[in-house]
Length: 416
Image (tube, rainbow, N blue to C red; front, side):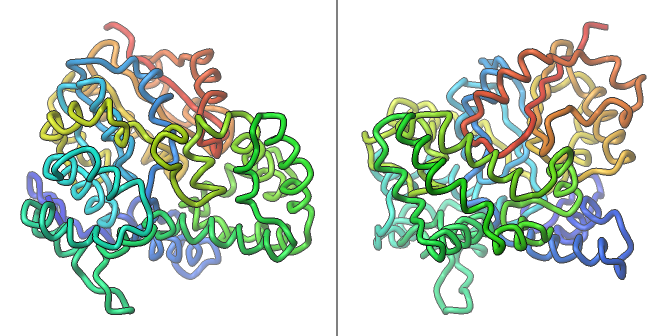
């Protein structure tokens, strides 16, 4: 599927389908207008890379050969990482056409670029001015028409979208804009966040955070900006999720300070490419620190050889599951999408997950707040068919290097 989902007579434009997932209030209310602004912004590229830790995902899912996965696409780094466990199949779904085009382009690049060095040059290095030519030669001829149209469409500057890979692709999208804004505000207050990359130990990282970054969240401008729901649209956080994120805290500035503290202080920089993207605004040079799994040379051949096991679908998660047979899937990756959902949408989703899940199937998801959001909202007749793995969930949350979520949750299907 490309610009629309057409399976079994199901036809909805991506924009209309996205609105169906997001809109919970009338259009001319304050909340409704906020939802529609977010939906408009979300039709473009949001995540140049995913902001969930695939290493934690794979451990939580106990992912191995033979598993059949359904996952939300986002930036696609997670999908490619899962291939290193050699699953039988990965069905990728997303409502965002830009994310669909990015996932399809990444998969085609893994299949068609001449070798690992070219993959590294294209996706890990900035200021590689020949990357658009590499796209023309090796990727474009093998790309589906809709994705090729997306990448070759010209921006208001007259450049093809694919030319973003000639510079620093990860500075683009809503997330790139949000990080750039954070850096600008910090510099206006005399702080360069990139200086944390000079730290040689966790102790030095902690000192930089406490002395330079933490005080920023007491600044009036930061408090004022983060007090507006639209300020977090760049993180891909819709209005409903903003409220979940704020639960139990006095201000959003305090919430963001706590999440940034984990990103800056809890993991060595050599082991956390999320911190590199947040503070240095790039990936580390090859060999200097850990890269995402799909960019590591040890995984290149496995991902290249198994890329055909992935199907990318422009459709919502629940609608996709409606077309799958009973007991046909083993693993489900929901990212943080449930934070957006109404009770009715949650029940529809979990009804389909439960129908399609084989015994022992696992579901993982993240939440803005710490607790799982399912009890009291999903019908007990459905939820009672699942075990909540609370201890493992808490461990995974602590180990998630992306650091921006309040909760990580793992559910396992009970035997009938």
